[in-house]
Image 1 (tube, rainbow, N blue to C red):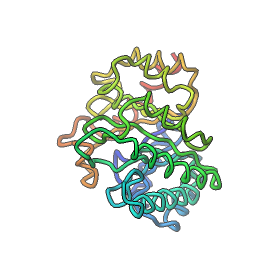
Image 2 (image 1 turned 90 degrees about the vertical axis):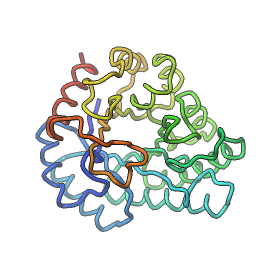
Image 3 (image 1 turned 30 degrees about the vertical axis):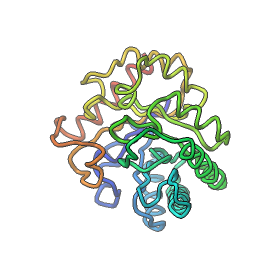
Length: 280
């Protein structure tokens, strides 16, 4: 197992200002970090990659799609913009040395049509993401679709649907993740959810029900870790926790108060918790 920390706990844009956090995460014992890719600046990401190389920290990445670049839009130009955005994010992954590009890359975050997904949207999404996966293969990057809860998107809300989406795309560089926060809201049975997606699951987000320190909230961790173990999963477990430093994502994260002592406390306790459950 590899253990990572999502840098969204601190920022949507990792710069030299955040190097002390990277140093600290290495000293705590993390194997890597998950980097937000919202700005497209190849030189910046290449420089960040050198810093991470110095620390021997591996890296994955996360991005989102917007209404103006929505892979499932009925407008071909907007779908093309969505594909262009994903290609740019893949380029940044290559620049920084990230192996996985994760997130709700299938549709626009926080955008709703007023009804459930349509067949046209499903097919548009498959077409756009298949093209993105073909491009990702040339950069040795794996795309990792994240299903979200009903309050953040309507296109993919369950492990079963996301696994089917990836199977129908049928590309080795298009897979999915399992996220304990979203599963806690949407899944009727955690074991069945993991069983439904284990052949497509290449990434796991460890996230508490209140988005603070994993293990100190209401997620059914006994069942969650038992299900993940039963799938013989041995990839990344990445802590996804949010603070108050993300106004750009406030509409999705809905974090209005600080629910942990400090970022250091959260990162330290989270790693101990993951290791005790995954390796115990």
